[in-house]
Image (cartoon, rainbow, N blue to C red; front, side, top):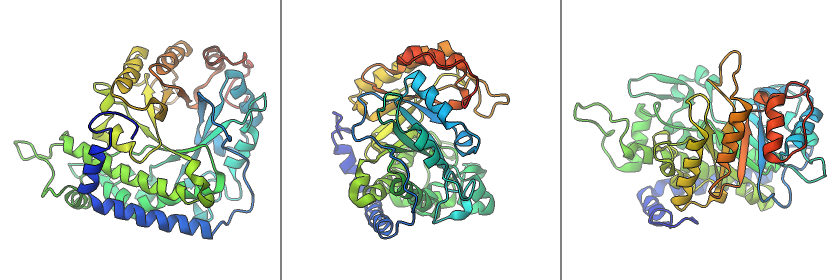
Length: 414
């Protein structure tokens, strides 16, 4: 760790390694196995375009592209390339999908392709790989950790709440730590690194909070912590807010990330070490430096395995302000974190991501949030999603990022 302090100087990390030696053994064994398997079998014949510049920009300005746009065969990637140039974006993140629904033919699991026979990621990257002046653009890939279809076919993998309610989207902690879902996620991240060699791979929708109380999770909790039972309150109910649970959840996710990192390290004859592994994280607005441990997002713990954290500075749905975002960046810097390991992502959703019709925050609020995000040592910022970037948003973004005036055509591909 590059941070200072009793936890950030590695003392806390060493203590946790002593506490759960089984996890390091699992990580090392699976990492070697995954790396060896990929090196021995490279089934892809169509070589994708360059997605990772030789020299990364000092500051990245990126836009995230929705999975629906990535996989739409009618997407006008040339128009999107022009829009990225116009706003001054030197990076773009393409949603590669889930392990159960992918944006390309995955040789290991061809049945999950969104459109068999099409490599939508390569198609997009060929159009977006350079800016207007010829500079290579950073292209990252996003992996969504939700598994709703898998849960429908096998409900036993679902996370379970303290009241016994299964999650429709999230796998259990034990599935992520030692089960098939975690194995498949590691395999997917590793194969994406081997096939595309992107600038980074970011895992999103990966959190543990309400749905981590099944019998299988209790067995894992006992094994990892030595406890006999869940923390309980005076009435005997599970204390879902006990800090020990946040630490445990974060360690589970850090273990999964460590396996992904080991897998990437083994691809492309070792060149995979240069692919950043990132994770999207929630914000603990009351104590930003702590992260969001209740979701398994203790930043100190996750940064032991991930290269970068993508902080969700979303001000729309929960009525946060740009000033709140600057308080987050200030808290992270004051806590001694290496700020080069954070990207602050400005979400454009004004309400739920599922709102119909979609609702976006105003261009003015986006601009103020972006300025707040780029404070206290933060160099990399992101805007998400592309589908919410109206012509007015693009014109405003160009002023903030120093791009040229975008065209007046409507829509992400127009």
